[in-house]
Image 1 (cartoon, rainbow, N blue to C red):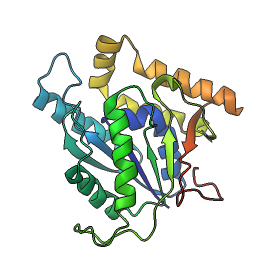
Image 2 (image 1 turned 120 degrees about the vertical axis):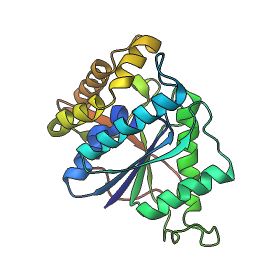
Image 3 (image 1 turned 180 degrees about the horizontal axis):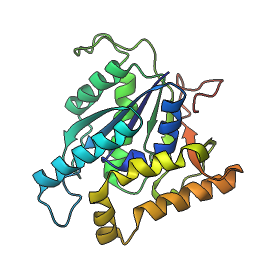
Image 4 (image 1 turned 45 degrees about the vertical axis):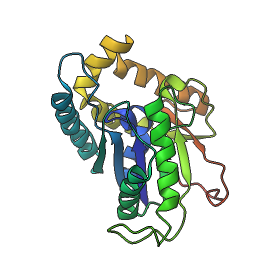
Length: 233
């Protein structure tokens, strides 16, 4: 299958669904990781251009751990738009991927970048099926199902489906470890040791699902996106 995951910032997917993506890759899926923003506000040390370049290298390295393709839409942090230009830019990525399903941010996640990136992915994945909306690649032939990934720290999120990532937790940890600039930034800005938070959340979701480590998801309940079989690994 083709799997497309869209996050706001370069480290979001690794934190929130990196284990599921690693498991998808291991079962032979073609995985594409996209971030809407370039991470240019994620530092108290580097300027915007410098940290954006660092974070792109980190994101590419993290995707390479599981052999995933990586795209960045290139918007500045705090400025992810929902206009037609942004939608069309992501439509082209969706068409290149031809996803069987998408993983996106939950609508109630903690900051506007996350919520906008999720809405942008929801809209663009529908727009990608409209032949009269022209981009370089041909239109997708169906509207793909959507899965919401966990919110940061799981606040306000009740999973419906779980992915057992026990055998892929170390891969998830290696992916997150590629984002060294964010270990320092999140400790400075949010007083969080992000690798510890990630492990705690994976263990907590694992307790809920009866396994050692897990990630939680919710399918989007929308006409045309509801399916009668499981797609998550």
